[in-house]
Amino acid sequence: MKDKRKQPRHPVILKVDYRDVNKFFTDFAENLSAGGMFIATRNPLPPGTSLVIEFMLPDSAVKVKTRAEVVWTRKTTRSPSQKKGMGIKFYDLTQEDKKKIDLMVSRLKMGLC
Image (cartoon, rainbow, N blue to C red; front, side):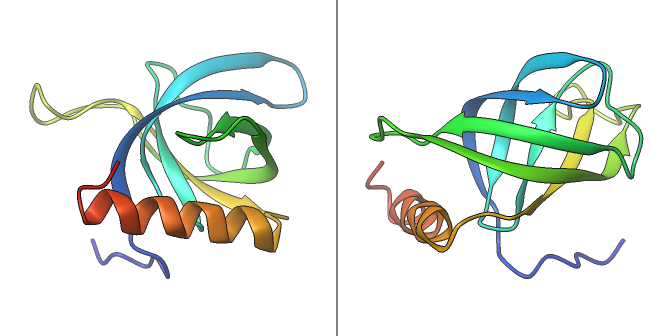
């Protein structure tokens, strides 16, 4: 499968609170970019599901909050290291939050976080 992401994602573990129309969830993101994230969950929501997502970046006291959409899901795994979950695309992310995420991803790549 060809990677269609515009921004590269970087491995990171972040607690993520999210909700759809009916329920509230808390799981952990395993990678992040200014374009989206992978949320590890045993019960991924179907592609096309609209969400509101909130998470805190390391070294930040302010939550990032944005609308998002489930783009793809992984309901089965091929190895013990692979987790079930869903790929999320952000919408309405502020320019300030995009900059914060890009800076954090750059710092992670350099081993500064």
